[in-house]
Amino acid sequence: MTYSIGEVAERMGTNTSTLRYYDKKGLLPFVDRDAAGRREFKDNDFNFLEVINCLKKSGVSIKDIGKFINLCLQGDDTLQERYDYLDQEESVLEDKVREMQSQLDFLRFKKWYYKTSVEAGTEDIHFTPGTKFVDPTTHAQYQNKLAATKNIRELIDLDSNDNQ
Amino acid sequence: MTYSIGEVAERMGTNTSTLRYYDKKGLLPFVDRDAAGRREFKDNDFNFLEVINCLKKSGVSIKDIGKFINLCLQGDDTLQERYDYLDQEESVLEDKVREMQSQLDFLRFKKWYYKTSVEAGTEDIHFTPGTKFVDPTTHAQYQNKLAATKNIRELIDLDSNDNQ
DNA sequence: ATACGACTTGAAGTAGGGTTTAAGTCAAAC
DNA sequence: GTTTGACTTAAACCCTACTTCAAGTCGTAT
Image (cartoon, rainbow over all chains, first blue to last red; front, side, top):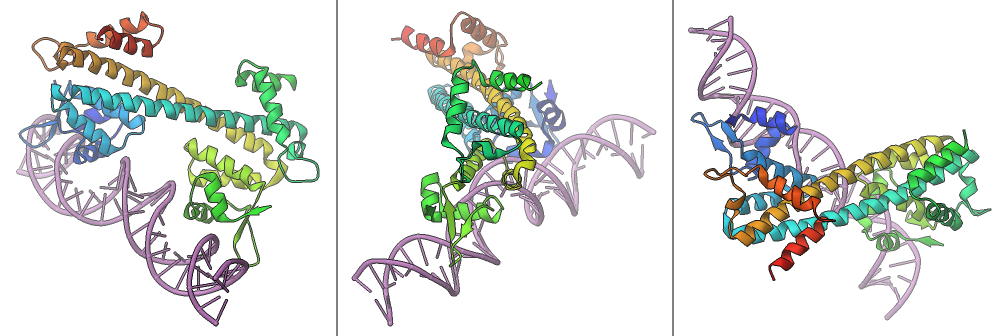
């Protein structure tokens, strides 16, 4: 069974020009052509496409994805190298997840800050009296509430219920 | 206490041209100038810079960060709007984290795939005999091993120890 | 008083990741 | 047999987020 670029694009949730662009950038060296020069994707090519998708969503550049795909086509000699690459990529992704989680913490602090401000009708409740500086105790208050709560969703949601 | 653009750049781990670029794009409308026209950052401005940093790391575009900052300068009338924006941004970030975690799952499966291939000396162990198609049972094998293990690190690490 | 370093601006340049356009080929439907 | 729709290419274009450059202005140290 073979598939046209249009069928593949639809199945992968992308469009044909993006796939052609990837091909030009060396991400699809495994794709065959028919007599008329049209791309002919095989079932197994979806395994590659899945890997490309994963690396792309993990933030790997087109160039580096190309390098990995080309390692794949070099056979069993590059198995260890491919493992090592994915191992390193796993660490990179884990770091990104941790980073995002700490941005989430900050976002949730700010949500709490605005929620309490909305309730008070003014942001001033968080300022050190007489200045336009956010009171350092503000963040401490939040940390205390947070420590006393299983998760932040609960904190935000319980607060909402308090007001109803 | 005020700070020059150079001091701020160093403290924020960026450089002066990036800060000027942000200013030009409307991200720093709160920054004052001295008599000679030089930017003069105040202590409180670091609160804004922290927010900019958080949104940037969360993947928010320069343009949208600018909108948020400008809401901040419009006073208490926009508190609810700011809360709603961060609430939505929290969901977006949570989705991203979930997405990354599923990419991590896939990456770990592929690590297992390569690890077992390296041990066997060939990728062929995962192919349906007589074809160059990855055997659909490969992923099932991995899922079974995974189900029998507390976490994937353990799976990967136990496998490594088997070989020593 | 002059040199140095840090600042200012506008404008141009770069990199990454596509998207669009123009001109053409081909197979199947009418 | 011609029209339609899906494909082909190279080249141009676009957007985001910087980065670099050129020319000029300050304040301070020598």
